Image: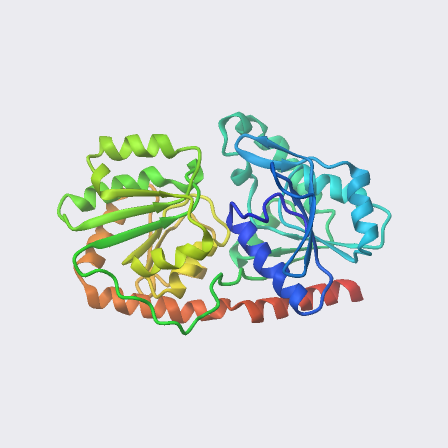
Amino acid sequence: MISDDFLPAATGVGIYIQRVAAELAGRGHHVSVITTRRRGEASFEIWNGVRVYRTFTLKIFGFYQALPRVGTIRHILEENEVEIVHYHYLGFLLMRTYKAARGMAVRHLYTYHMTVEHLTQPLPMKPLRPLLFRLHVRYCNRFDRILAPSRALIRRIHQFGIHTPAHFLSNPAAFEDLDRPTRPSSHDMFVVLYVGRLDPEKNIPYLLTAFAEFAKDHTACELRIAGEGSQKDHLTKLARTLGIASRVRFLGFVKHSDLAQHYSDADVFVLPSLIEAQPMVVIEAMHFAKPVIVTRQMVSAEELVADGESGFIVDADNAADLAGKLARLEGDKALREKLGRNAQLRSRGYGLSAIIDDLEGEYADLLQR
């Protein structure tokens, strides 16, 4: 598996690979991960049965990018007698690994976790978007197969000019104890939760604006924002400007194992993103029986959320829409509980075991071909 994010995980992709790699290793597969190396980290370790190789890395525009020698990658592939290379991140590591594997009897599989828009959010990267888009399409058409966590995304990538066979494979729920009881929310405080990076594509100013509108008529409310990112200072200032600084808690980076408590404490989860494939945080919130609100701009919005049944889908350019949905949930506890129960039922379709079964089937089919 090839990814610039893995251990420790800074994104949902890193969490995804941790869960999938460990489960595959537990089933007896020989799994190796090539990833970035940060200061103080070993160049090699075995983690939960997974062989982890960390290579030379630079931090570029706030993201760690692995820049290994092609010969180093080829040595790792040969040493592990690799049959399938599964790519998860578009970047230098992907391109150098593909080059290293040329001439070897391996299959190339790519999971379409993110679009080029995701990768070019930093302002200096935006002028490179057309070039990177062409590069992305070129590499996607070289792979043997693409996996996508959204059926709507499959239709979209074919419109991009990508002809490689693409199959649907969902992301798994990141918490496995599906039958655990959830702790009831506080009766005297309505808690809105966001989990994710604090970067432009996440559209958090929209969330703050909508929350400020909602908070005008609802004093016992709080917005909790878990995550770090390039916009943190801007968002902190915006909260002050909107007059809601005392009602917004910036939690900073929260370890994934500690997120369970925040999901349990929340009354509603909101993901205001403009660009997402299939966000794991939405599945996690659903697992904890929370109504979820997502934007219509997300390609997988209707696949994840049954509007009005397990949560709401709102317009990302209409803060009043989101404010109105928050007010509706705050004023109707029975509705919150109903939507939360329905969301939890939907989350059961994202169990890790069944998804790994499907992934094993994709691997086996690739090798047979």
